[in-house]
Length: 140
Image (cartoon, rainbow, N blue to C red):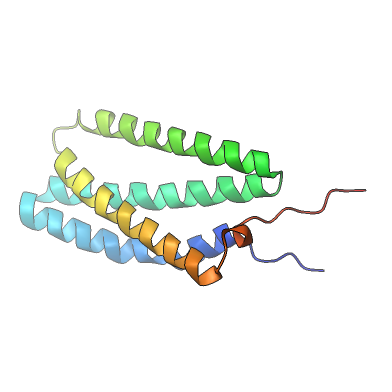
């Protein structure tokens, strides 16, 4: 019997290709409103959202192979860890002369909202949250 496709991998397969056009739009808007530094900063914001998607999907897929409790721990802990990583990255990047925190956040926030909306649409299309959890049968 073959394993079903992990929904987290399916999310990444469907949504990660949208990162390149989003990066182009964000960088273009950053360049138009604030120059090269803002363009790179906005691009980094989009890259952070894409990295967040991949990190979330990989950790959730890993946890779903263990147990429901592992899913809960990884989801909550991963959320806190990714927000902390975002905050530290923002503070460290802000030390660079060319970095624009406004452009970074102006790209990061709408991209995150759009990503969450697309994830919700994917969940609705699948009909049920329980479809997201795949637990392998325990060895006997």
